[in-house]
Structure formats: structure tokens, C-alpha cells
Image (cartoon, rainbow, N blue to C red; front, side):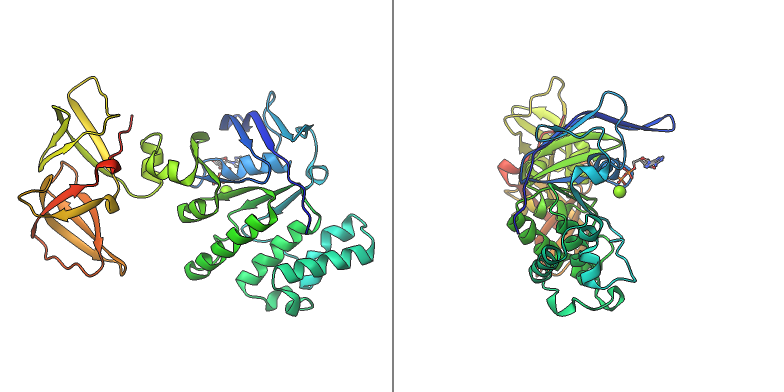
Length: 348
Ligand SMILES: Nc1ncnc2c1ncn2[C@@H]1O[C@H](COP(=O)(O)OP(=O)(O)O)[C@@H](O)[C@H]1O
Ligand SMILES: [Mg+2]
């Protein structure tokens, strides 16, 4: 299927509901064909941002939204050529699969043979051909989700907007569909804005991720930027798990309760009190005599592919360290821990 794709630009788009500012003025550039993920906790303003792009909400005075050279700020949703998929799918229960997918084409009075051809193409693309004439309530959750996507794509939108489309599904199905979604979005090449509060989804699907909190953008970057170079504590704590090492700076080292670690070169700080951060998978067990830090196993959690250790005494805060699933350590065991040098994160 041939889809156009346009870049999107939001300029100083804020949103106030009944006197309460829920979105601070935000600037966002989305490249043609890019998948941009809006990630953040519930209530941070993701859906509101998406609805402004869709034309379902108007930004406060001064905000502008453009699709390519086209200023769409004043255009209602039906004139913006956007396809939307919601968490609930909002499918029509009284229509068949075919009826749902072709709905927008009937509204637009697309000639019947063109419409039929396009619906057939989408049925095939979504592996729904065998289900074309079934009512919606005979489909699985994953199939419904594909119907909702096909319906959004049928009108050949310039932009695809998805609001937590996988959230309603159970965990295993969600993992499978996330992979399918990834393949599909890459094949389609359509400019996509994808809203989620799930970091695994954001990592897999996003060309870039926008981390939001409390109506603000905290960071925009590639999944690796967001994970390995978080801009601040809010991002570091929301995306993945992070450990804090607090102590005193001394000769390029951070000296803490259970030992010392070399500071990363970027860790410049005026006072001697200091802290650095690292991810649980970036530390390893080492001979206590030669390890950077010494502590004791406080508890262990066997998670199958890995075991997550909680280590006390190594730093003021307990540290979470991931080791191979087969590692078994009794509570109280003294351990040595070293941290992969490049994995230390300095946060302002
Ligand atoms: N129509 C509305 N009227 C009043 N407040 C709203 C409305 N829509 C959203 N909000 C508020 O705006 C904030 C952001 O909501 P939303 O964009 O839905 O967040 P998210 O999608 O990130 O969970 C929330 O505090 C929410 O209660
Ligand atoms: Mg939402």
C-alpha cells in the first residue's frame, strides 16, 4: 500500500483545561516516516499531545501545528488526514471485519470497487482475509487490534497516531504484537506518533523517544540515548532501574561505604559530596579482595533468565545487581562487586 508521509512540527503547544495548565508549551519535530514514541507515567500529558496532533484538542493560543508545509492548527480531525488507533480500539460491534475496515471509505464516498480493493489489500496485510466476514466479537484481542490498525490505514492517512494500542492485552500477547507492530510500522514508512507508558514498547518501536513527566518534555533521544545517557534523574528512574552510589570525591574516585569506584570523566562537581548511578546489569560479582565494592547479600529474586540480588553495605542505598539466573547465594553472603567502567552515569 502506498502511503504518503509528512514531517510534523509542534511549536509552543500548551494546553489548559478549565484554568489548569496540563501541558507546558512544547516544541516537537517529527521526521517524515519516523516513529516517535511519547513515553511517561499516567497523567503526564501523552494523550493530550496526541489529541492535539489529531485535531481533537486545540492548543492554547500561540501554539502551532504543521504537517509538512501545511499549517493544520485550525483544521478539524476529518480534514487532517490522520489515522488513529485507541487502547479500546473503538470498533463497531455490529459490523464485520470488512465493514469496520471499510468504514472510513464509505464515509468519504470512495467508489465501491476502489474501496473493495483497498480493504482486500489491508485484510491480506493484516492476515485477516480468512476472517473478513466475521463479526468483531468472534475475533481475538490481537486480531481486533489489527482490524483497528487496518481501519486507521484504509483512508491513507498522512500520519498514524496510536494511543496505548497494546495496553489492554495480556503480557505474552503484548510481546508478540509489539514485534508485529514494529515490522509493520517499518514496512509502512508512515509518520507515526505512538503513546505508551511501557518502556519495552517505547524501546522496541521508537526511532526516537520523548520522555514526558508532569506536562513537560524531560528528554528526546534514541532508545539508547534515553537508557544509557539519561538527561536527569526523572528519566533515569522512569526508564529501567538505576542504582545510586553516594559518597565523597577523592582523587578521581568516589569513595563510599563499601569501597571506591573511579569517577567517569564527565563527573565534574563543585563540592566533594557526590553521587553516580549505574544499571543493575552493568555490575558483576568479583573476588571481594579485588572488587571495587564489598557488601552482603540482603535478598535474592530468581527471575528465570537472571537473578536480581539486593546488596547491602556497599553503598548508603541498597544496590540491585543482576547476575545469571543459575547463581544462587544465601542471604548474608559477603560479596565483591565491580562496575563496568563505561557504565557509570553522572546525573545533574
Ligand atoms: N478533557 C479534560 N479535561 C480536564 N482535564 C483533562 C482532560 N483531559 C486530560 N486532562 C488532564 O490532563 C492531564 C494529562 O492527561 P493525559 O494527556 O490524558 O495524560 P496521559 O495520556 O499521559 O495519561 C491529566 O491530569 C488529566 O487529568
Ligand atoms: Mg493517555
